[in-house]
Image (cartoon, rainbow, N blue to C red; front, side, top):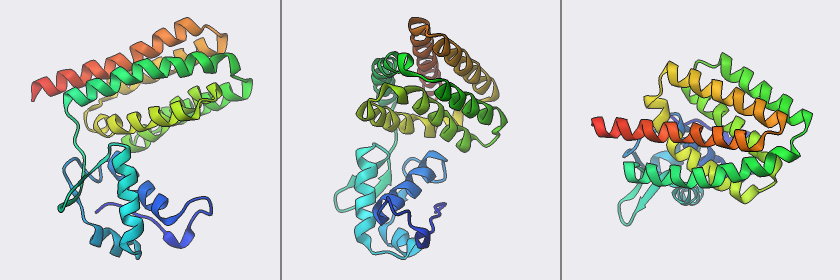
Length: 220
């Protein structure tokens, strides 16, 4: 099934259901579990040597994030995304993420800037697209974190997770290079305190993949 988890090394801050949700989420985002694939509770329970109770809790959590669909009397399946849903996600992200960045920039410290530069340096060295996707969120999450708006950040992360699983299929080297160039320019603007320019670039950064998805879906 493409999912791995050592339940013998449980993190004290997370219960079994949360750890299973983490493993399933990671497998979905990395493309190991694909849209339309059935998630059989018996198989998952056997793999992790747990009862079905934490499995059901994990699937309910992933359903709330839009990654899994629970079908009455049929089971759970990795959810698919239509072009209309993608457009809606990016419309919401375009509304929320500039708010987070606008609130974050005045509170950024030199340590925040160094952390963001370190993440970008790691992205430069990453060739695995699934790991690139994780680092991409790590950058955006750290960029917005000084806004101290945890509910907004959680919402944005869930929308990000929904689309990034498609990006790992479609994205090409030229898209990665342009994305990284925009990341560095965004960080430079934020470090200088140029809020309006940074937010304008962020909006462009989000519109481009939305347009890219629209063209890909049209070609199908």
